[in-house]
Length: 62
Ligand code: SF4
Image (cartoon, rainbow, N blue to C red; front, top):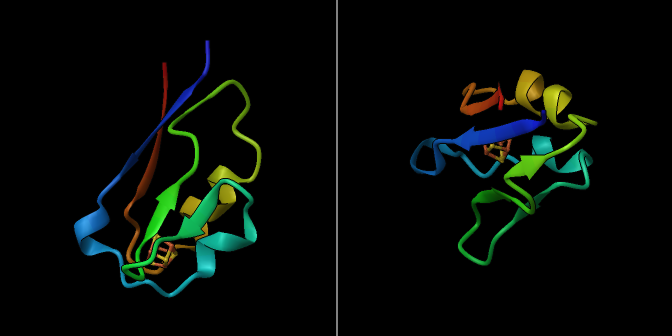
């Protein structure tokens, strides 16, 4: 069992709030992306989802 990240990139504001978590980076176009979309451990990704002001990071169990 693990976790899968679903992320609605088109709605990203590029605020950078999620990047406190190592799995989230800002691309050259100024939008966030997850380094890994499938994870064994949820780690800081749930906190990144919770902190996102437009609520576009979803984490599913797989
Ligand atoms: S916190 Fe949300 S809106 Fe801000 S950069 Fe991350 S994904 Fe984009």
